[in-house]
Length: 344
Image 1 (spheres, rainbow, N blue to C red):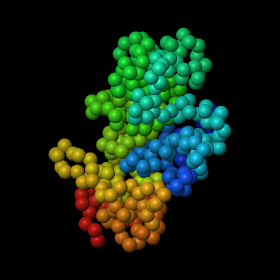
Image 2: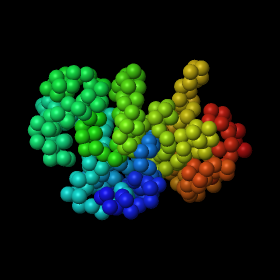
Image 3: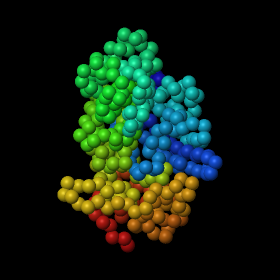
Image 4: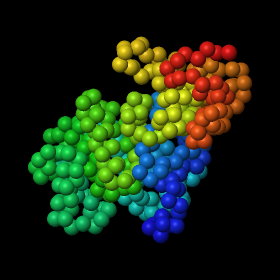
């Protein structure tokens, strides 16, 4: 792995997802859950994936790690330092999970084994990834609990998940993820089930760990506010497609897709401005609308929006990295994030 990394340009992405598509077959339906998703994560970069439930945020990474099961048909490429993960057999992809890419989920209590102590679950991960003996693994498990700021770490190693709060269990899950020393941590709604104070603490911890270790972070969220405070770049997904991709600073000043605008308008502000929800809901994957998938919910749609899904392209005056899948991307990008655009 080191030789392959050294041979790549220093500015090459750590992971590059190209044209990723996912098809499922059930008894009632055969449908496409993800449609040609393209995204990258650089070394040490924090990328936020934003969108409503069912937009394709989590399934993108589950597919990348080979965790979707036999009913899923996955195509495209998931390149980790140039190596396509989709072409790996089970033994090889198991070596990637946790060691190269780790994933934590929103409900830590359902991810931890209630019948085993915290210490035994962390030690299991350490022995799996690094072959540590029990004493070495025990000392490293304590260090990891200290690292994720759990007080009285030595005592907590003996505790069971039900003896800890939701926030503490989420810290344990982060410790287990760190046990593999991953280069990319995928955090899937890691704070949704927590109160606001604990949520802020967990997000601060993830940011501190990223900066201290140099690992990259893919933060999945439905909350644009969380992503705004914790990520360098934002990828907006809707109905299994990338709608917009831009640097954090640019997407909040010049959002170039109506869906992005809708998500921004739903963020409460300090002045108490009334939020404006997006009308309608995400379409069922087995019954997508013709043309642009967001057209039925879009306040700025034109008849031509029903003809075909617009490709990702840069709006006029934007950086090359800023790309939007909207026919009206240029005029969208000229207004500020919270202004109502007057339809022509």
